[in-house]
Image 1 (cartoon, rainbow, N blue to C red):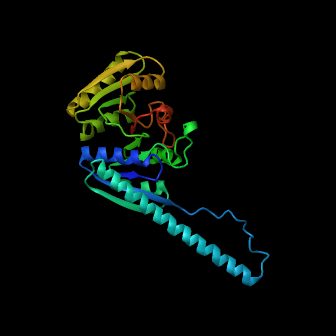
Image 2: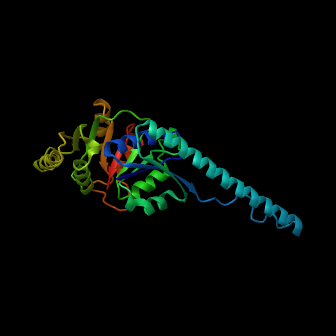
Image 3: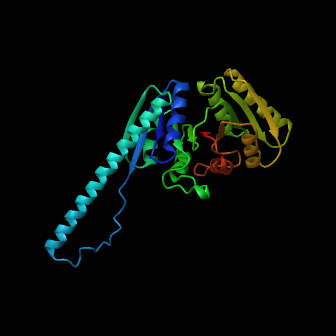
Length: 283
């Protein structure tokens, strides 16, 4: 089993390493820490910067710009390796045994697509270096990863706390059923306190759905409580997380009303924005 975690040197990197190490320990998985160097952005200087210069001066300027560009590239790689070295140390301190690092060039989404077949779970921070904390801005890479990934995505919160209580936001959708099935077959949740929460009417149909979900978990030797609560989905989930001291929220990426390949479910998006605990997403 292999877990791949993205680190970027932001304030979330420590948390990503801690959560990834926790998961790797429980799953007896190899952990690979990854730092992706994005494509070099176009220079901000005007395109005709050397247009009015004499040939010799223009050649010298272009050479100096090329050398500066090369220096920046080397510095970016050096910084990337330093980030990975620090991250590996954090992961080892967090209890991970099998840790490797990889520096890649290109794009986070391209990296995910290239390695997804060989990955069992991805770990990523809720926000990156350019995050606007005041506006609860989600990192652009996170949104892209969640939209594209077919493997489970563990979204690390800002700080790691021991995980004992898990809340499963269950709505009977295909993705929530997949989440429950995956949980029943994973050692990640062994011995944890699990609660299934369904927000909706207390109808016979919903009662059957949540009881079937609990039976699925029980088949995997996971004991879970189940509750159906009426109200606004986001508000009820947030209230339960706060009141019951939940350490991990498990959700499907899309609810039953929003099964579209390029759109994150509205409830999922809201939970990612507002939740102060890590979120495990299944698709």
